[in-house]
Length: 265
Image (cartoon, rainbow, N blue to C red; front, side):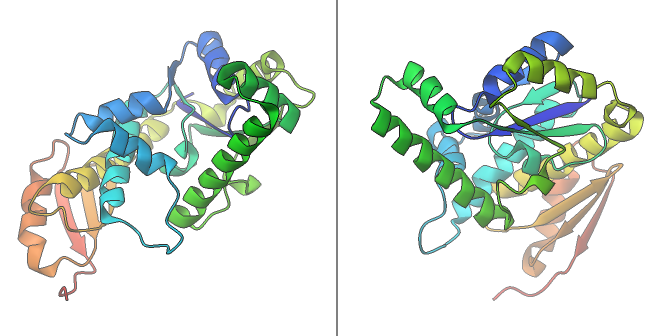
């Protein structure tokens, strides 16, 4: 098994399930904080990276270029963290940042409101009305974040391989169920699965390097990688040479192709 991603609402038991699976399977358990710290090593403040994950788009819907940079760094940090497999990630957007495919099991955990209220009150020490308002606010922000960045509904079941409702199934039962699924051949960490994750990690690193390099940080591009061959799509006609220079210095890049070039302005 390569990677398990766990998506859940606030105080729905996702972290507890991740820790149970980590113990049972011997996988590393990785949350948002580890990814933020890795991304912050590129010189970005941790609080700014957290805000990029937490704060939904503005009511005007204006996409902030700085947020593009932060998300590029976060995706690069996440893919680098999981590319060798045997990892459980329980942070926001893991199923979208990593995408689905061979060797990746995308879980969605849901829980009744009363369960979530009880869990939140134990940690936050707030009144019942305050806890309910907090849960609703966090859920709405996550919903907006996913819809704006990906044009997807956070609760769309087609985004997940398995959805577990904790209304009648407890964490231990859910843990045993998921652990059993990881033994299926489809989720084995095969050479193909390893190659897919490494390609995604390389593409994400290229995007991040372009985002932080002062000569290319104004660009917004899409990057694909396959066995060291990197394809970069975007409008950067006047900066094509700089793009090639930055990307050619990245370990693992063997070929560079620039597509859809168009004059800026």
